Amino acid sequence: MSKAKKGDVVKVHYKGKLNSGEQFDSSEGREPLEFTVGAGQMIAGFDAAIPGMVVGEKKTIVIAPENAYGNKNEEAIIEFPKSSIPPDMKLEPGMKLQLRNEAGHPIPVIVTEVKDEVVILDANHELAGKELVFDIELVEISE
Image 1 (tube, rainbow, N blue to C red):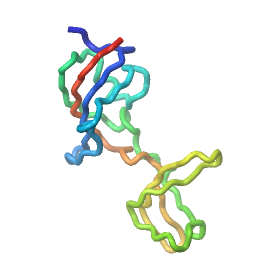
Image 2: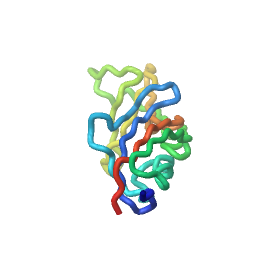
Image 3: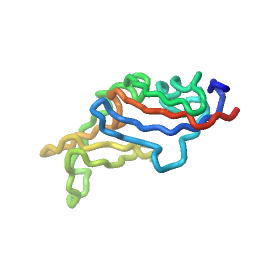
Image 4: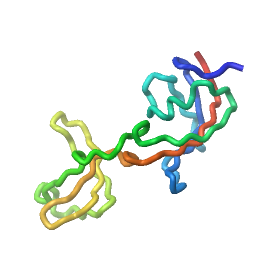
């Protein structure tokens, strides 16, 4: 039976959870996820778990933040003036918004706090700083 290796195109079913058991993503009910092993298409810890697996094999892996979405970057937490927000927009902690950078590219942010003059926005990936647990099943290997 052939084992997955760097450069192979693989298909996997997966379930992603936090340590609390809360599920944040899954391929359940969808086509399996397809990617090239070692091509940098996946977070590092997920990619590193695939070489050596055989079709039909299942495993559970735990990925540290450094090998997932990184640690929280305090510089990505910004104070945004309320005067720049439409007055009819009601902001609440946990709301997801989109800002644009100088080049016009969207930057997803989460409202973490609403103060009198400013809104605190977090532009870190929502899984940054978190240890991730994945249940993986390798369903196909093609070279």
